[in-house]
Image 1 (cartoon, helix red, strand yellow):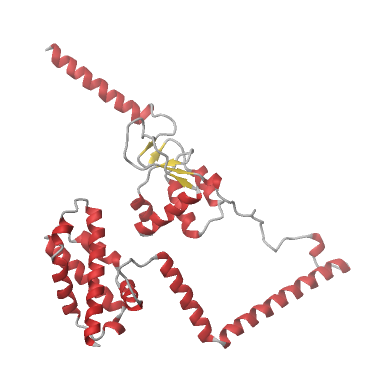
Image 2 (tube, rainbow, N blue to C red):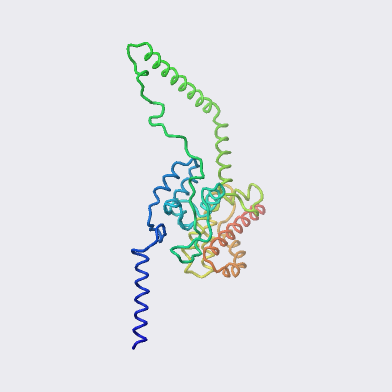
Length: 317
């Protein structure tokens, strides 16, 4: 009887400790999930004032939204990607840049509420960044008593100077637009080169991609759709799941590169690609982590489908 009473008493004390921790005796600045004892508004306000590229500022704001007043936070990269509308890989690259320039760090030895955790903690450090130039309300439309048109010669001269300057700026702008219109081929080539450089910088090709044809086909595969169908078909057998991924990869590639692949039979590309990938299905199944298995499957399917198309195009030629 006494042993049962002691057990009940110990259990009651444990429950009271848990209630006090989560309700009334939580240490200042301790993060509990998304809820915090302090607002993240101060850190976000500092991030807004930084002179950063749009994507970097957006990601850093997402981290700051999870931070306490000291800038400490522990959101996952997939959550930041979901919040920003970016891919996980894009957020990983931007996070690496932010850590390199010192605006974001991952300090070690930090625990959540006194309990050890394997979660990566981040420290938002907006004080280390370059700030925007001071904001001037009204821009160039400042009002001044000297600039108001009046009977005085000073005011009229000032207004006339403003009109002449704006007229010369508008003429220069029209001349610039006319030069672009006079040479549309050069303008389109310049835009295509710019877009291509941006695409290469955001999505570098892997080492197995060699040549313009392989790069063009690689960029025609929609990897996010393959990852989505891999997740949606996770309840199917491994072979059925792989077949769905191959079908989506071929469909997106043929749709995006129809002029290049019009001589090929999409069904044949699917069959040959699936037969080759099925030999490595055991290796993929041995990857225990779901996210790692999804990533490896997307890479393998993309590589095999692209290489199969290249082989068939060489035979057709």
